[in-house]
Length: 594
Image (cartoon, rainbow, N blue to C red; front, side, top):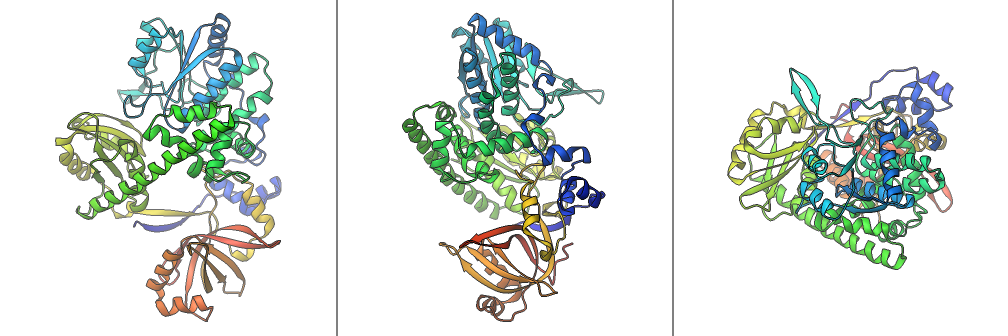
C-alpha cells in the first residue's frame, strides 16, 4: 500500500473580503480560491444558471456545421453518426441522434466494437457508409486524429463534420508545434488552437450538445425540448472526468437535478436497476453506479446495447435491457477483481520496481485499463497491464500513471519496441510483440528517474478547521459547492490531536465504525469511518489491543489521532446532529500533518 503525505493548499487571497462580497463563510471563499477560481468566476460558480452557459455560435465552424446539417435535412441526405464506445461516446451519440431526429434528419448511427474494430472511425467504417448511401458523416467523441479515415471519406465524395474534444495531434518542427487537422468540412472542437470558445474542457457530449443547441436556435425549437438532453451531458461529463467548472458545472448541476425525474424510459430503468430510484443522484452515483453499467456493454459486448437502452420507448423493454446491462457489469466487476488479484500476485514475484509492467494472460483486453488504474491507485506507481491481443504473438497494453510520470513521453522513449501507441500524461494504450516484453520492462525502469517520494499519495487539506467551528449553515454552504469532481474536488478539512473517547462497530455487515472525538478544549463531535476492519487493524498496530478494547467499551484510553474529514448533517428519528465523515486519519504521535 502506498504511503501518504498530508499537504495543505497554500493559495492566498483576501478571504474576509470575498466572504463579505459574496455572502459566504470565509472557509467557503478559501475552498473556491483553492480550486483556482478568480473573483470574476465566483458569481457563475455560486449561481450556476442555465442562462449563463456560452453561446454555441462562439465555437469555431459552428455556422458551417449548422448550415451543413440544415441542408442535409432539407435535401433528405442520409447522415451517419460515428461515436466512441465509452460513456461519453454513447451519450454523445444519443444527443446527436435525438437532436437530429427532432429536426427531421434521415440519420442512423455506428459504434465501433472495442476489440474487433478499436477506437474511433476507421476506413472500413467509411467504406461501409459509402456503400450504404451515406452523404454526411458526423463523428462524436472522436475524429480529430482520424486523418486517414476522413481523407478516405473525402475521396469517396462524402461530407464530414467532426465533433470532438480531444487534443489536436501535432508534430514538432524546430521546437514549435504544427497541428494536424483532419480534412473535414467543419470541425467543432474547443481545443483547436484557432477556436476562441470561452471554455475548452467540454466532453464529447458537451460538444454534441452545443451543436444541437445551435441547431435548435436556428430552427426556433423551444429550449424546453433541449434541456432534457442535459442529463446525458451530465453523465458523460462526470464519467469522462473533465473539469466541473465553468459551464460544465452548470450543465452537470442541472442534469443531475433532472436525472432524479428522468423522462427517458431507459434512464429510468437503469436508475431503478442500480437501486437509485427516489434518491438524490450525485456525482458518486453517476461515476460508480450508472456509468460503469453503460461502459460495461462496450467492454464485454457492444456499446450499441447501451445506446439502444436510451432509445427504447417501451418501459417493459427498457427494464429488460437495463437488467441485462447491469448483469454484464456484474460480470465485468467479477473479472476485474480476478484481474487485480492476479496482478497483485505477479507483483509479489517481481523485484521492487518504479514502473510496474504486469502481463496477465487470458485477461479480457478491455479490462486492462481498469486493472491498471486499480493497481496505480493502491500502490501509487505508474502501472502498465499487458494482455494477449487478437493477433498471435502480439500483446495489447493499457497504462495509468501518477502526476510525476508522463506516460505518453515514457512510451515515446521506447517506441522502437512498440507496434503502435497513443495517449497522454496520465493514461495510454499500446501494443508490442510478446518477444519484446522483457526488454520493454527493463528499459522503462532504467529510464525512470523518480525517487521514493513520488510514490507517496498526497492528501490535500483545504483548511485546518477545528470541528467546533462547524455549523449547519456552514455545511449547507459547503454542500452548495457540489457537484464535486475534477477541478472541484470535495473539500477536506483537518484537525490535529483529537482524543478518540469511544468506538462502536455498526452496519449490517459490521463495516462501519462510529467514534466520538474530543478536542483539547473538551468539545465533542461524532465521526464515522466506512472501513471498520481497517480502523481496528491500524489502532491495534499503533496503540495496542488493550487500547482498542478500551475504545470499544468507551473507557479512558490513549488513542489520539489527526483526522481529515468532511462535515455532514446526520438525521435520525427527526433529530439533526453534525457528523464528521472521516476520510483519512493518522497517529498523532508520529505524523506531522499540517
